[in-house]
Image 1 (cartoon, one colour):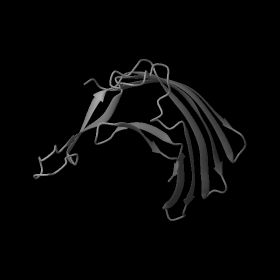
Image 2 (cartoon, helix red, strand yellow):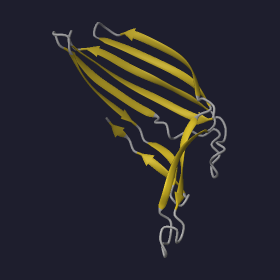
Image 3 (cartoon, helix red, strand yellow):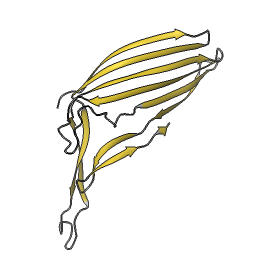
Length: 172
């Protein structure tokens, strides 16, 4: 297996809007080579293997493995706002967009030609925000939140059937 590599070119801007607010904007383009993807193989008990009259089908062993799954390119950007409420209280909010598209067909999928299609296992949208309170005795308190959009993955079930698994939007 080859090491995964990512090359990124980024163009960014940082601008103080006023004494309390700073704006940042970043645009980027990325190349992904030898993308490492995880997959699993499920081995099941056959008929009569576990005990006489057993119909089979229960998982015996699930083996997780990794392999290189092709190459892709990504395009995206991020916009952020940093702010100061006072000397002791500051915060931030930022939004990021990323679209990763396959350069070629993944040799490990049977039913889909991925060339030119977006990889749905990467979240397209992310939103972050946080607040920091600095206390005069040297400690600080940080609170932040992170939201990301849904993702999809192709999952192989016990009977080797391919199904689409979905991770819905979530907030931490």
